[in-house]
Length: 138
Image 1 (cartoon, rainbow, N blue to C red):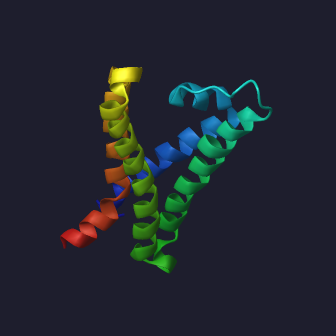
Image 2 (cartoon, one colour):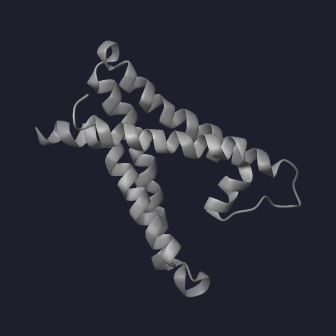
Image 3 (cartoon, rainbow, N blue to C red):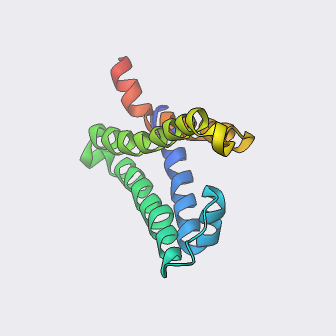
């Protein structure tokens, strides 16, 4: 394993764990994102299992699988899956920062939780981008 693969695989495994936990315990996923299903509509818990559970689990599992199959698939496959999942995390950080700027006056979004979440999301994104960043840096 090359050094650049370590942060990518670690972040992918963290994402898999978060996804599996949300899939099995949707209340945990709901608590992390600080949302609750709308009681006016049935099936809201399915959204947590699907979006924060299944999608997170399999998206990050794709990164792990391409890492395990990189001898057959090549480093480009790992670079591609890592880039896609890293973009998801960085996109979340961007959305959170925009909210902290635009929404704060009305909704008090500049919280310690949101600052910590931005750091975590950027770290996950950059870790998943490690093969891509190493490639463009060489």
